[in-house]
Image (tube, rainbow, N blue to C red; front, side, top):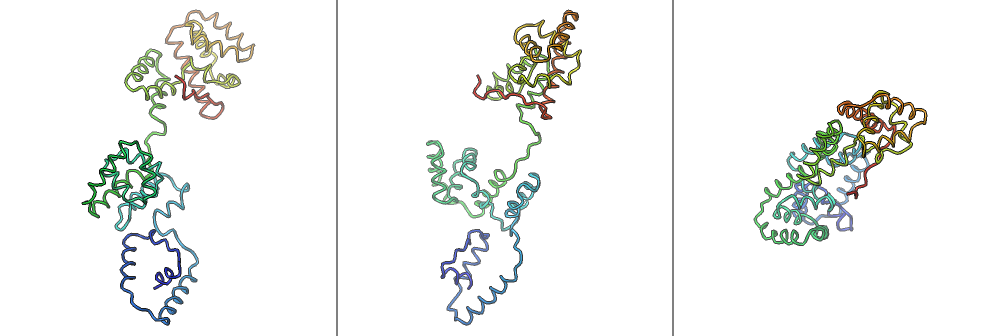
Length: 326
């Protein structure tokens, strides 16, 4: 009676927010109503108003609403677990969760799923939102999905529910990676501590096998030769502050001995530290004599590791390679 009264008086009721089972039950109840006299209606309205006035606090009313109100206050792992539990409950409509996604987030779903599933997804969306999404797709993909609409006529409500639950589970939960860093960063960190021959050989193979991944790894690698491009001039003293003097002598001496990019990096370091310290290092390098490759690379790795540690704790900031760099 209250719903019918509000509807007749242009009340704005977001009934679509109710679970589908509740919407169906309400519709049946409205359909069963007959003529209501004024006395009965006034009595029901008064009772309803009395109930409303006694309410001091309202709760979210659903797990999803509670999760939204707690966003940023509970861990992503807890959010994912609770969403999975909620999706498994009877009466839960996973489609509501899926359809709340922005089209920018739904587009990858249509690329990953079959045209038939994508057609069902579009069918559940509002006409305007579905039209916008269709316009975001490549022409061939949009045509395949549009054609697949013809194959959705025999989809049962049970199948529709299973499809919604699957999409909600796969695309609406919080993805928690077992690793905090990207694959490129992880293999890059390993190669940073590898010998030059091992690093160059693996990187060459990665670039040949998967150029995109290989390029990401190349940018994640930070070696002694990368110091001039990645380390700001004012940060040089900070970078070498925690490095053992013997390692500095060996690393820079070996770099000058090898020439090329390594020698350029050594020169960069020497020119951007105090003159007295640079002179002392040059003197010790001159007295050191020829340096074995294994000793030189080990010392350079120690220097690079110290620089990365300083970057991690915020002592300095490494320059990020240009994304457009070839």
